[in-house]
Length: 98
Image (cartoon, rainbow, N blue to C red):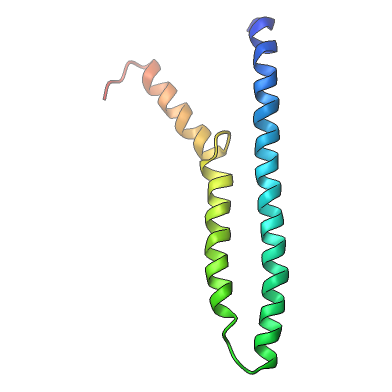
């Protein structure tokens, strides 16, 4: 690999790395707030002898799960995404046709 290509791609790698790190940090914050708020809701629910706190737990938990799936599996640079790209590169390199 020549140094021109390597130097040209360096800012792109830095940008992608910062973007992915920011997205993961956003998910960690989302999870932290989820735990804190839902602990409070469970405490309030238990104090009243009711079980209504399970509904926000499930609803928000689904949102947190989807957020995590997008960040860790579907985002560019993620392991699942990278495997799909690698498979497509191999298929194109081997001359496979659709």
